[in-house]
Image 1 (tube, one colour):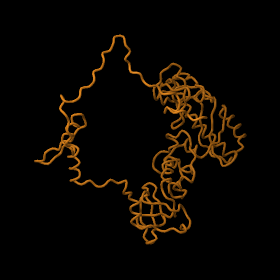
Image 2: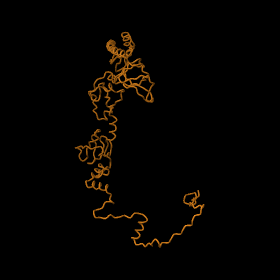
Image 3: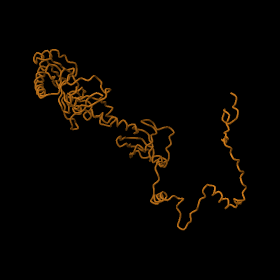
Image 4: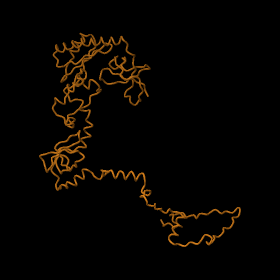
Length: 389
């Protein structure tokens, strides 16, 4: 087990593990860490805890120290410098006539380098722009091209649902979203309704995709030929969430009816012709098949429930009507057999007239009177000679 803390550089950004180096941190504390970009200011989002080494994908870097009030003032100063650098960069882009949209500017913690994020439809030759910015700002310059989804994550805003962008709040990484997800969820393919502010498909289409895929497996396809309790027909519509299907019956194609998926028996899945030689079974058999009467218990009446309670309290062999004598059942045993023999008319001599058994000879001291068991010959177990091999 390894002790770690989780930090985040931006709101809604990805969490990173760092070694607390023996110090204790609480949620919300500012920390100074060393990264590939240099010294950075971050915020602790999860305090000291232990995790398994298997969960670590890279060696842990130690935390330099806990942030002080002076570090917080330096961070605020860098934000003011970023606003000034952003305006200067926009002015220089216009002077050079470059086809690029500046998104944001970001200073590292010690102020030795500034990064400009921009978007563009193609490649941009900004070598002259970098030289001009370096001479004006007197620091290292880095220009980084990003996509429109990253732009929405950096700027933030409100979506068509009225809530802040998911990518700016809690999404650490972008998941791939395709138009097939919108088709599976029976959404309108109007781009204005399924696209976010960034112009790409909304990230929330991914949230319920697995649930819809499971429902699709249990639902019949469009234009499938099915059997219903009212006869055969063709599926004209499917409601995945309610697990129902709309069927046009052959007996009444003008009035579609709605059935639950459990009431349908698919004869031909998807589009195609009616199966050759298909004979529609009687409606009684279809209804019986759909209801599955063999699995449904018979309704319990009040008299049946009362009789079951009496039977459980007083078993049938102990229960008798008033005035009725209890019938004694003969029990197996020596005395019962003798009584049954007398009732059947058998004549048994008195005990004193029965022949006496022979007296056993007295055992001599030291004699071996143990009963010897007959040993069976080894072989097939029955005492017979085994067949020749």
